[in-house]
Structures are given as C-alpha cells and as structure tokens.
Image 1 (spheres, rainbow over the protein chains, first blue to last red):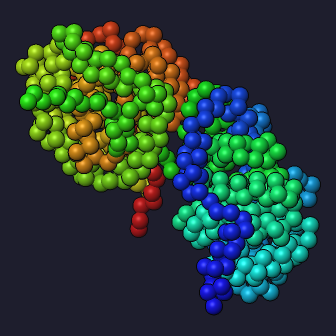
Image 2: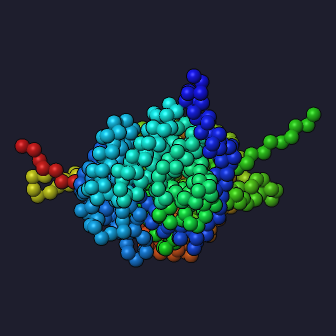
Image 3: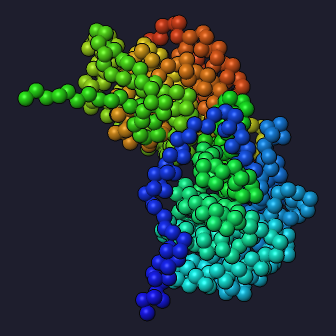
Length: 314
Length: 288
C-alpha cells in the first residue's frame, strides 16, 4: 500500500527529475539584486521588460470599458517620443476576450491572453474547464492561461494532472498555452520542480509554465522563478525543447523586473530574453517601468501619480 | 578592569528605520576641539529618492489623522525632546555652542513643537473661509496638505532651524524629507532617535545627512516633492528655482547670506503652515 501513497509517488518523481537545494537556490537569487546595471543596459532592460508584460486585469469588477482602456494602454503605454514598446499581451477573463479583441482589432502585435479552466482554483469538472478554453479561443484569445489541478498533484495523481494538461493543449488549438503551477499551494521547491516537469512533458515547444494566479498570498518570488528556470534549462538540455516562462503576481517595481531579467540571463541566456520565451504577469509593473524610463530620459525622479490612474494625491 | 568604550554608530532616520547611506559612505565629524567624534552617513540622491518613497507611503495615513490627533502627536514629540534635553544639548555643543546656549536652543525647539501642536486643529479656522457669493450657494474654501515637502536646514541653530522648517509642514498632514546641516548633523541624528520614540508614524519625517551639493539638484528636480523650504545661498537658490520651475513645485527659500533669528516670535507663524497648503474652493447649493 505504501507504494501507492502520495508520498511514494512524489518520491518516485523526485528521483526521476532531481530535487532542489533550497539553501543554494536562495543564496543564488539573493546575489541577483547586487548586479550593477548602468544607464544603457538599464534602458534596454526596462524596454525589454515592457515588451514582456502581460498587462493583466482579473477582477470581478472588470467591465468592457475597463478592458478597452487597458488595451489602449497596452498598445501605447506612454508618449510615443519616449520610445516605449507595446506590451506583449493583455490578460483578461474569458468573458472579456471579445471586448479585448474589439478594442485591439485583429491587426495587432499585442496578443490576447485569457485565463481559463475555472481560474483561479481550477475546481470545476474537466468538461467545463475544456469548454471554457474552447470558448475563449473561439472569442479570439491567442493565449490560454490554465491552472493545474493542485488537488490531484498533492494527492500524487500525476497521471490525472498530465492528462488534464494534455486535454487543454488539444482544446487550445493554435493558441499558446501557459500552465499555472500556483507555486504557493505546492509548498516546496521540490514540488515546484516536479510539477514543472510534469507540465513540460506534455506541452508544446514555446508554451509557458507560469508561477501563480496572483490570487494567493504568496506569488512569484526570485526563488520559485529560479527553480522553474532551472527546470526549463534541464529539460531543454535533456530534450532540446524550449519551454517559456512567466512569473506572475507580486512583481510591481522596475527594479524587481530587472532582477528577474538578470536571473533569466544568467540561467537560460540571451535566447530567453524576449517575449516569446519570457513574460511578466502584472498589472501595476508597467506604470513603474514607464516611470523609470521617463526618469532615465529626463534625469529627474518622477512622481508615480503621473503614470497610473491612482487618484491618491500623495 | 577598564571597560572598553561603546561608541554609537550614527544612522539616519528614514521611513521609521535607522539606516546607513545606500552608498555606504560616511564623513568624519569633529567636535568643537577638533577631535574626531563620529562618522556620519553621507547620503546620496538615491537615499533622497528612497526617503521620498517612504514619505509617500506614510503620507495618506498621516493626512487622514484627525487634526486633534496630529496635535497630540506633535506635543508628544515635544515631550520626548524635553525628557532627553540634556542629551540633545550635548549634541548641539559639539558644534561649539556653550552649554547655556545649547540648552536654550533645545528649550526653544520644544516650545516650537508645542506651538505648532496647538495650531493643528485651529489653522483651518484662520486660513479656510466661507466666501460671500451673489447666488444661493455656500462657497467654502478649505485647505489640504500638499504632499511631500523637501527641507534643507541651515548650519546656524541646527536643531531649532530644522524643526522650525519641518513642524509647520507636518502640522497640516504633509510629510517631510529633510537634509540636516552639513557642518552640524549630529543633532538631527539624535532627533531621529526621539522621533522614533514619539508617536509620529514612520516616514512622516525623514532625516538625511550629507553634502548639499550632492543632493540639491535632486531636491530641485524630483517631481514627487511638492514644495521646498530651505535656507540656501545664491547658487543653490538658482538651482532650486530652475528645477522647481520644471517640476512645478513651490519654493520658500530663505537666504543663507542673511542672519535669521530662529528664536524670535516671528520665526513661528500660522503663515508658515499656509506655505505648504493647497486651497480648495467648493460650491454647495443652499437647501430650502
């Protein structure tokens, strides 16, 4: 009976994919913040980060109007003279996909990503989740962000987790898939690495693994980002299949974003420093990136209220 | 057995925490007799930027406090300085002031805080207004704090002048980023320790030490600073005026070349509170 317990199943998977040195990972990521990034590299990094943003609104109070203004911001984040690129995508709920498509038009480089599969919990029948994916794709979504079945994962039912991901891959058709592991619910780095491998084995080249939904207390950190980057590296060295990565939630400042890019550069190299291979899922990050670009241009530190809709006078 | 002396590492008070400069630089401070006294943090424009972020974070909460509560807290700060008046006087004598003069400066500083503590729930009566209009409307003018205020303190009366510039700004709910005297920074270091034990929320007053020439242009151009109260020389006035014009901020610049009597009654006024207020006028229909 022991062999069928969740612990035994996890152990077999760890033996297969290797485990994570937690102290080593945390010591390594603590050093990323110490890199000295000077003017030219900083401007390049900020602009690259802008081009990697999945500009996100995932709230119960989202309206077609709010999504339309988000799309405008995605198309032109700031004055044209600052030379800020467009963001990679907007990320919305399935019901908002058609409104986003209307606002962006069909002839645009900005992609539409939609969370689906009963985001954020994933606790709905598979049939419903697949129908949601198909509906979002039919409405014009270019990318689907799915959540894995954490309940099944923690119960050791890896076959079920993988079968579900594979079913979503099929349902996606041509749309790119991003598999949200929801790292805060996986509890350990070993689990994050194991879940990354489970997902990578069934998704297609160019599909993403993603840290979190942004709906739990703990989101993307440098630590779990690093664990997933190293999983991608090891998987790539093993199979030659490049998998893309998207940290999401909790990345709010330009400085954080640059540190994440340092992690990408030093773990996966230049091939991953573009928005086909790396994204930031964020809502307020774009404001700070543009604010820092304006600072680099003018030399003057900028007040945040010039770059966001926040009415706060401070 | 002789005991090893335990010397204090001076740190600046920013965002409710005691920090070193992000640059890790310090400059030596000598006492009145020319002996080395301590290494003082040599803050940079990045420290100023971080202090502004801290002030921005503290601002909304401070401005939302009731006027009465802000008065209580300013009074409490006065109490904290009064209770440690001897220590503060010692800090001032480092710069060459006699013990009697230093004690007088500390007493005047406490009195100044009590003065502004009294004004917190009264300035609105003096500066706000109900305006007469020729239509059936009430027309009110009410005040609002501006936001984050930059302060650059002079070398003379290093404590009293610093507080005289800070206190009227925070009375109305502004937050402050202040650069202390370069030649006499130590009273500001000690003041930070007293701020930390008062009830003033962290980030409402942020104190920096260091060299003016390294920070003046950032004070001038930082768009998040809404006003500057400073005692500065002609060259610095020019830099501040130019930067302030670009970033649309208000300036209250006293000339460093002139002598200012910070002890005088004229050094405290409700109009100093007005200097960092915005006025808002509202129309409201008169009910039947």
